[in-house]
Image (cartoon, rainbow, N blue to C red; front, side, top):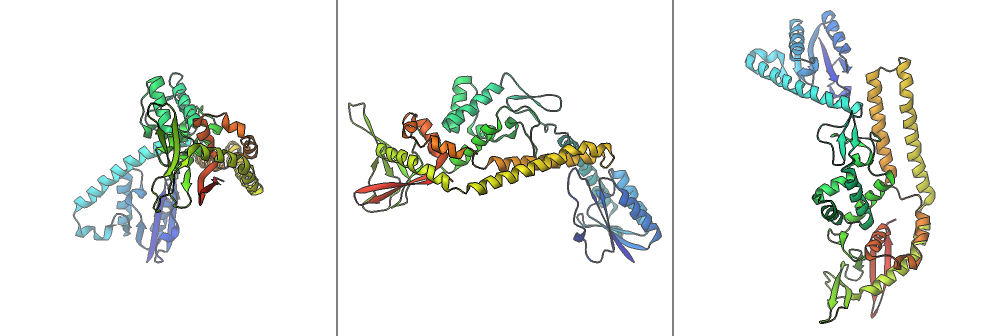
Length: 432
């Protein structure tokens, strides 16, 4: 006796399973992708061959409706074929031992699953057309005909939020700024979602975490988006309160001797407006404890060290390897774009039907978006020229503390204080 196996896959929702999922007892595997032509062939073979069993994953793979599933179950059983659904613990040969109500309950579950499947298929078709997902449009946009359109009344608020974050590098500060200037109150969590939301970059993100680029007009440019991502990655390395601290060295200084981070303390004298700033270890375990250092002296030496060491650190970077990596990403994007541009011609010549071409275009667009994200995470192309510009001491002296904090964290991972008896020196660990 012969044993068959059958699988049906909707290309909009899932990928085809590996035929090797079935045991070695299976003599023949029938696989359908989108249409059920192989199922018709299976029925023809069952009429001409002695088939003992048919393995399927779920009963709903036999049809798009409960009626179709029931009719095909009855037809197969009439031919003496035992149907075994491995993911539903269903075996038609054991039906006599089970009440008929169990089968009716299973068919009701199939009806519910198929209703959910049709909804997901509708969402999948919208993804193929690069239409927005269901739900309310993000703040700053409105729903247009099949895409998001910029809301002229609210988009300036979003743009100003990004500009403030880029200027000061503080998420909480940008949230407070919106509340003060526009009376737009949002939580810090919402602000973080704004900063990472692909919609504001002109892309559409779906629930399956796939992104399609350039689906509508962006509120921020790609360059701004890349800088925002760098700032967010940089701030993750810092304590939450130091990300928006008023002093430029906050969260960056570490004592090399006791390995403790150093905090900035302010000392004032009664009846005097002048204040003194010091850097002291937060949790020093030495005895006696490592002494505090004047903040201004550490700041001055940090500026001098950056001006001297930053150009040298940039020169040591493996620039040819970095350029090769960028070229590889750019070439891969160009290749995928070339394939995408050739799809209309393949439709005209009949090589691809419209539905298959849409599915292929969707996959190409998501691959291009992923490559563009990888490209955006690389250091900026003009890093060497930027390093030369910021190696001038006067550049740092002309900045405010907030602006200096922004640039410090753009280049510096950590400032180590190395103590030598009564003297000390510092060593800078750059990000790259």
